[in-house]
Length: 186
Image (cartoon, rainbow, N blue to C red; front, top):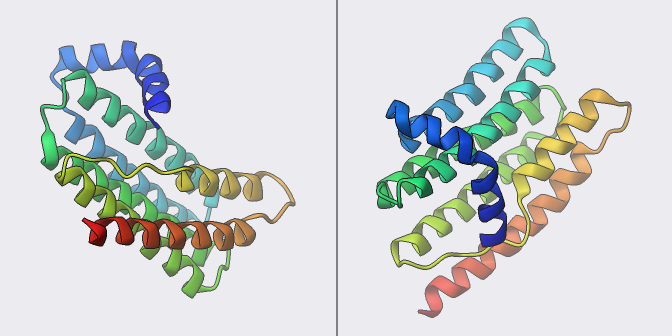
């Protein structure tokens, strides 16, 4: 995870320098990322074009990566409030994905809701670990796999989303159990 953050920070360095000079905070980028996800979902409903959401969710993903790099470039001045803002608007993006899965992919609402719920629990556990000054490391990036799967389904005749939802639900459930075990073990 730290290696991935280092790579991301290197990638975003030119942009974070510009944003810092403009006085744009990481919290602003986090909030913008959540609004991009929500607005793109609303537009995709209005025009009945799932492509709008897919473009928006990738832009959300880009901004969500940028906000962390921008926060680290400030030397973690945002602290726990910045982590809470990031997690809240990350969750807003995941909620939009759940709604998209239910509406455009015709995924059973239970499985879509379970994905959102498990992902939110993992984020909550991460936040609790952050309050203690420790990280809860993840082995995979569930959002990335979900966004890729949604994109593949949109661009091709392959239907991968339901299988990916099932696999990610199982993995997120395991992450939640391990995280809860580690929290209560202390």
